[in-house]
Length: 546
Image (cartoon, rainbow, N blue to C red; front, side, top):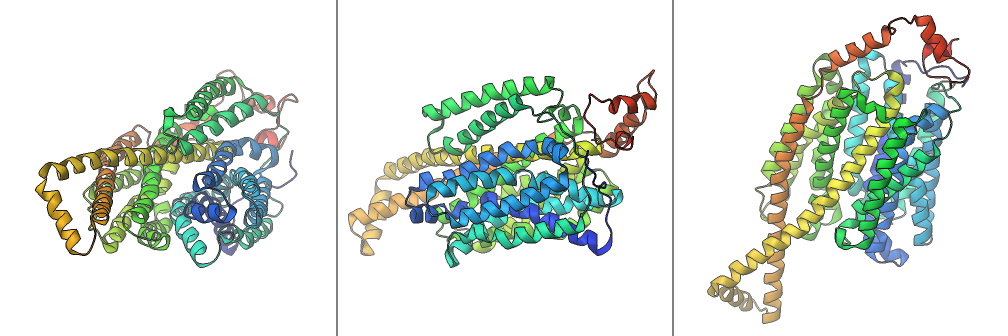
């Protein structure tokens, strides 16, 4: 067992410094998920590969990240949460530097795989440690700070990636992590010196780990490459999807029967965690899909560059920043389901608003729409996470955070991929109808050609102009359809929320269950059972002091 002292709530400037450090670590890890997205064409050109090959830089990071996030609970119990957090940030910083210094595409790919793997524990551990350093009455504030960094990261990633790539060179999107990571490591070592959660020599669940790696890896390949390979028309996607389903089934069966599982699937026995995780997956997936589609639409159809596409979408983070210090207190004082309902209702209304956009929309209106979307962002993650963890024993928070974060990230990848496929295929549908409408009039098409040729264009240029405008309008209509459907999906998420128990009631039930020993057993019997020689030391305080 670790000789470190337990983590106790901090106070004053020390707590403020620790909170800022942990929040910055989470932000750094989340932002790297999307920071390279807009830079792929530049990276591919500089390293001599095609843009399609360059997208593997994003895919392999997502695969290794998705595999390692749910392992956080087991790794935290094995090595201690503070030690694991410091090691993860240090390794993330090191591999970020390797990414920036990579001379070939192969070395960049290898560095991104390792960077994604060590980034996995950072986000859930930052949440667990934030909760630990705050007193119980202020823990909702800690969750709201963590939620703000998680929701702002995907927004800031493309913006910073585009600005850095445009103004400097692409390696700096990775090298910028070096001073930030070093600062986080040194500060964490200082403010949490000598403190850590208990650690124990747990057996390695190797079959569970193998099933998880194959299942998540194949699933992530299916998500990321399915759109470009036309989904199940590709033998690769059929193979990876089949392997993923088989290994997920084997993983669930194995983990439920394992004494020391790599991932604690029994967390879903807690009703609020199960309901909250479904709500988080649905809400974040739809939010992330819109976050992917809108900059893509602005750049490919509306003539925006990557910097301006980031600037007009940036206002969505304003309400999250303003609400963060207040929402923690509000959630702690009342039912978190009401605040989460505001998020889903706001997102549904914004999606309905977007479904009526036309190609004449200007930058100001787009910014206003994103500002309104920020209301949903501000009210989303803090209440839903607080709702999910209500009733969980404290020692299960890190494992629950890792599992929920992994599901949230995979949901984002899945729904974003499906949304892009829907956008592409639906735009073809609208384009065919627009061509029929244009060709059906006869005189209408001829009138447009005459007008274009009067401006000095020849016949080929005129038809190219018409084809381009048809494509722009078709993609606009397709985007409208996506947001129309999204509005109803958000409303369904709102309904799912209310399947959870009132957070206070859930927490009270767990307290009663943990306080009352089973019939016929005394507390001494339970304490002795927890500390038997053939069982690993638990994080229970009774066992730790025996």
